[in-house]
Length: 426
Image 1 (cartoon, rainbow, N blue to C red):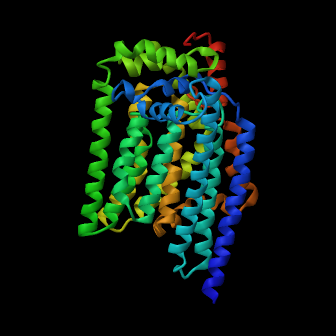
Image 2: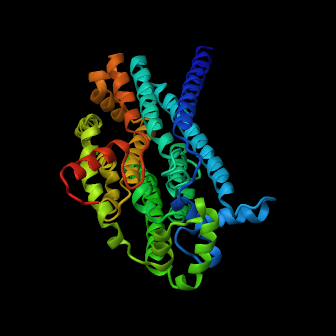
Image 3: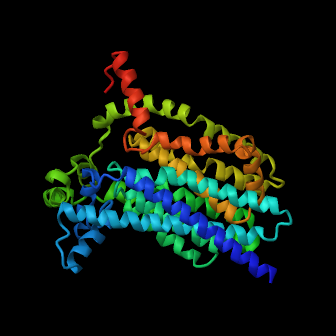
């Protein structure tokens, strides 16, 4: 009887939190939603597999399939906005479901914990990370910079993959999920695939014998599939680029605001042109904004360092130490993007997403060392409501994350430095 009562109370607690999350998400969306899709994200919808197995062709193929089966003309900008709105709503819905799933699994694993305070602290820690992540995730995909960006699909796929790993069933689906992410955007091998790959290695190092072999094989299959697709799209998918170029440009113009497509993305993905020379000034802006951003995020970076230092130090075996070390450095897959590409707003969000999702998933998997060390790292402000509120809500001042620029604050400060010192870097 008592167990049933506890289950009812847990369901009420989860439902109450999800209700608050929904309210927060609605407020953030209404504040940042601009109801228009920028030309980068509209242009990608013109890419389709009817031209061959081309780079970034999956979303456009799906969109143009919808045009064939729906009784409306989807090949116009107004419908791009409508489509993007509903895809974004689906993404937010999956994110809410993911939060609820993590809380439910976390309560299931921690019910056996003899210390009720520890149980409550672990759940509240998950809720803190969820609110923190929401403050970033809703604005970035609501404002026009990334409204409809392929990143949304990639993160959605990795979140679904994380839920499969928590659930422990149908895990073979991670192989096609990994492939789909690269078909959406080959940059996913650096951005969000790390969530799936690191969790597979984490589970492998947490198991013995046959179970360990199973997860290592899954890791190898996901890694090799994604790598092969990445090499294809980067090196071999441009053979008919000149033949299809004009048609794609014309289609993209129909789908973009004011009839103007994004020329650079077509040149890169269809013709295979290296854009490095066109991005020099943007790189200069990146390298000025990046240290400003690190300074703004310093309290959270210090928290992360304290947490991982304690977590790795608490490991008792070599395998355990390795799995925590892999979790700590997993976001390092972003290094090629940081060095070679210019969309630092997207890169910073991808890094932040990795750590937030990993914290939620490892809490939900019942890893006691994770929630104990996270509690230790956050104890300086956790029991002080004012400090906790400031720590949680301060990121609101940094929204929304953008694309090339990280956020409005770093952009303004960098522009001020460039102009006041007469640098002329951009």
